[in-house]
Image (cartoon, rainbow over all chains, first blue to last red; front, side):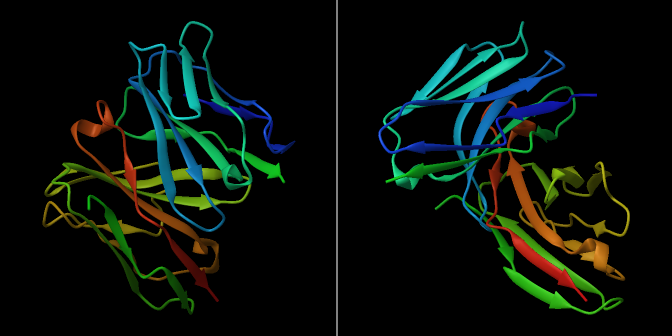
Amino acid sequence: KQEVTQIPAALSVPEGENLVLNCSFTDSAIYNLQWFRQDPGKGLTSLLLIQSSQREQTSGRLNASLDKSSGRSTLYIAASQPGDSATYLCGLQGGSEKLVFGKGTKLTVNP
Amino acid sequence: EAQVTQNPRYLITVTGKKLTVTCSQNMNHEYMSWYRQDPGLGLRQIYYSMNVEVTDKGDVPEGYKVSRKEKRNFPLILESPSPNQTSLYFCASSSFGGRIYGYTFGSGTRLTVV
């Protein structure tokens, strides 16, 4: 059974700092990994999707990497802004059609 | 705009009163799914559907029903809601089971059962 862990559970940084969010998983047989952003009480917004054959994806200030052999993914946020404050979730799709999620990292960027 | 639409956004109901949460997508996706999100437990899959008339249980299906009579719609039915079904619910859809393009989520339905 796939288990997904996100560390840390919460992170507070000053504006402008570069930061890394971590996602680890136990089963490397995955189709893809998707990073989402969730604002309080809101829906999930897809940020980046990495196929199992890919090593990384970039969108603006965001860069996500995937290392299946070590069971890890990272989401790198450059030059963080207060508007980046949200909970970040990673979801993995393995042999079944469902996404298995970590419990998220709550990010606070302080002005 | 490509999207997954859930209604209602907020719902307060009483124990035992049947309710339906609707979900509709305009992307012609084959795959649709329902999740619930609870503090400390994260997101858990309730039911999913691979296509019209094809549905199956997820991890926490007890107390829920679904139907898929049309490709675009996937309603979640609570026949006799109980307080432990108070949660934030999300509908999601994808093409090819999400393997290529990932999943699109709705904005959520916050359900309170008193």
